[in-house]
Length: 196
Image 1 (cartoon, helix red, strand yellow):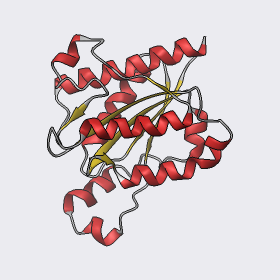
Image 2: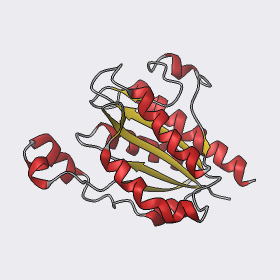
Image 3: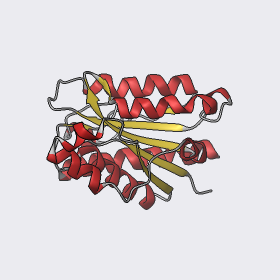
Image 4: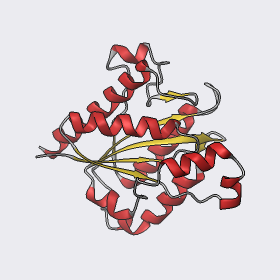
């Protein structure tokens, strides 16, 4: 059976967009069917347009569909990449999660795999807490958390966050690409195991 993975992300300036693209590529290479989806922008348009980089990034993602609850119900597993905002996931991600109540109530999010990544301006700017917050939500769903841990030597090169890849803003480095690919491949591997 081919596992179905939704790569869900939000990106203000492009970092998590880059992570999501690499995760989608790696998951497909590992044998998954992938839906790449972005969380809807919820900031007022005048705020977005007030920053050239933010406005440009929103335009760069226009070809990627906005996530819907159907994308979550469809999937067997989730790869989530969201920025850190004051130690927790961005409000755009949280707003999307808040639309999933009916799926959660019906058990449609249970027994699916999930892994998460993040970025923050500073290495100690809440990256681990952000990923743990995503996982806390997943525990309420009854999802199966698939962290990278230290299951591959790349984790000793990428900064060593065992909960998921994390970085500061910017283009994904070669080490970052390897780490994201490992995490995506691991997600696909364990999703396949759960599917029997």
